[in-house]
Image (cartoon, rainbow, N blue to C red):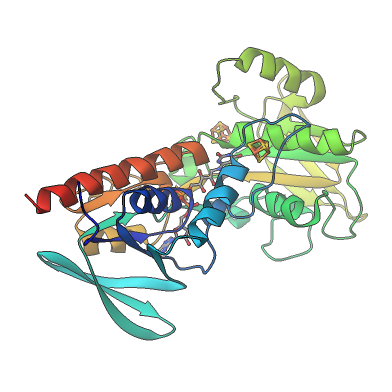
Length: 341
Ligand SMILES: Cc1cc2nc3c(=O)[nH]c(=O)nc-3n(C[C@H](O)[C@H](O)[C@H](O)COP(=O)(O)OP(=O)(O)OC[C@H]3O[C@@H](n4cnc5c(N)ncnc54)[C@H](O)[C@@H]3O)c2cc1C
Ligand code: SF4
Ligand code: SF4
């Protein structure tokens, strides 16, 4: 199958988009990647290795590996930071792109939308989170970036190593009141692996995990879960609020399922495990490319010549996003081959 006279536009350079581009490059197809940001990796670009000390298959290195490989390829062109503003289809796709304030057009034979998810903004919850502040309530993604950059967990307010950390799960997931009933699938496993990594490096850290139930799937889940439970304090409750105390600690209030009483506890650091929601650009991209949306606003069915991939479709982890990107690339190859018949 010779499709090397074709060009595929890939929107999004996260794990799904990178995977699609690598697959197409392996098959000799020219791709152009458009991303709002000017670095590859998407939401997973700053994820840290969670080995403790053995590999726990968190997927972070799969992103770094693909980001490094893609930079070597001449068959992949980059339009970053840039955004798609429109598209017409008259045989080929004529895509309008805004880069550095200027409008430009490019022609493509197929399009892959891999524009990913948006992390939930936890300022909507009563947990005292303030984006960009030096407060000691941070998101899981900020903790990932902290460990990736500095190698150690620190309290943002004073740089001290926390002695106690509360992980609050399902922040912006499985929340009917917010109209976000879905489970984000990967964040239980991610937070538990993160807590284990921190304890491995700093055994004095006491981690408490507030959760609804643990969603994590693997063949040896029972053994892994038993290990987590022996090291991490697990409380089956979601706190009502988090309040800063006068001595710069955090008071976490929750209904204790064991004593059946309202309980308050003090922590040095609170990590909010924010859920995965639809990217706000999705409705406009869906309109421009004629793709449907599901009832929550994730991308729905692909149509002739336009393919969808990764967490833009539904919450999924890195390895599933990579597989989804390769699958979309394969569908695009079959579509391009059909154009030549
Ligand atoms: C709290 C949390 C913890 C997680 N932990 C793990 C974990 O431990 N292991 C794991 O496997 N997964 C984990 N994940 C999930 C992981 O982040 C995703 O699987 C992965 O990032 C999805 O890749 P993607 O390519 O689909 O999307 P993204 O990573 O979201 O990338 C999308 C890309 O598209 C770009 N984009 C968006 N809109 C546009 C537009 N209009 N035009 C151009 N470009 C655009 C973005 O800038 C971005 O670069 C976690 C997620 C969360 C929220
Ligand atoms: S980044 Fe994750 S998958 Fe890679 S070696 Fe570390 S623990 Fe294993
Ligand atoms: S994976 Fe766990 S933390 Fe994430 S939404 Fe589902 S139940 Fe909540």
